[in-house]
Image (cartoon, helix red, strand yellow):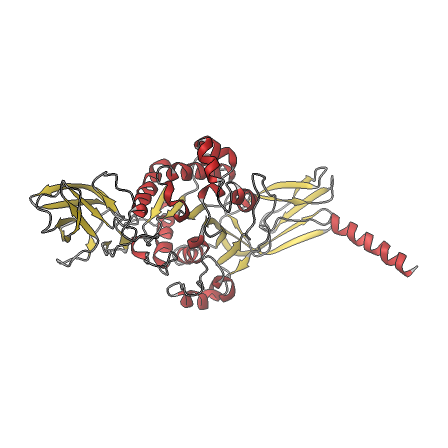
Length: 475
């Protein structure tokens, strides 16, 4: 009899559990909801049962009815950002309450290992000044909130929920394990804007861009042969989009950060097309019909890539630059100064995060007025045995200045043989020459996989690698 009673109790408990509201992992206590929009709330309940949603920032309630499978979804208007802690109660008869919710701006960050790399670094691979940010993170518990999507894979079938993850308030423990670029981006914003910042980060080291895109998008831009070749990788196309992007795409956000490309280095002829199509898809997924969600991405950093004198890296950077013309409301953060010849995960993440935050401050928060875009090549002219190079985004000037040597320039004549060159600032232009080249025709800067270079805008913006020629010497 005792066993029978226990069995009945177990069945009743199981039935009760099935009637309780179940939310996707990305909806939880401590989260930040996007301000001044209609956010999505969704989940499961007992099939065909009425679901009621009550939020602390508004009067009344929102109601819907779960479908035959128990699925339900509602939209709730959010106010302007504030530090007021809110609650959300959702009930189908058994209430679930989310607490310590903030209203602010949410940013989605993604990519491969340099976006995934935590603030605490990896073994033998530190993050510069990480201890300063880790030990101060507790002061930002009510300012920065973090959600990391757990790794998962699904080939061409969208998952409804993340494999794992929960919203965390900033603390030494949570910040140490958080994507360094993501946390430092949020930290820089908090120092300038008076609103809560939420970050949802979804990353997987060593992955290719096609893993973060749906099959429908890939078939639009790739030939069958290209698509087949991209299946010959450890993580196949669509797998991360379906498992790590699809489950969070209902969560309203302000914009995107992207740091990826090293695994696509050989795709310099079409990576820009893939990235533009990915951004188009993501914006559509988030309900952005007018490209209002900014997309900021990192120029990949210099590294040997197996051959320091090779030029596959700067050729890829050229491709990343071309993407700017294909992606509305986008910006690329320069990263020439961060590279390490023998470590693909540079310790210098502060500058990159600060540059991405500067884009957001200019475009989203109305705090422009200073140069935030890395200088790029504009034009050149031959002046006797020298070449004079002019730049875009010169702002208030460059360094090294005062006649000090600039490293990283090369010059070549009609023989197409490049020689290490001398370079000096002349006003806002650079004079480049070499005693080995009497009649120069072309100049390059930082145009190897890894080469020492030091040319910077005085607001700590590195000059982007460039060449004045179009010679086909890709290595």
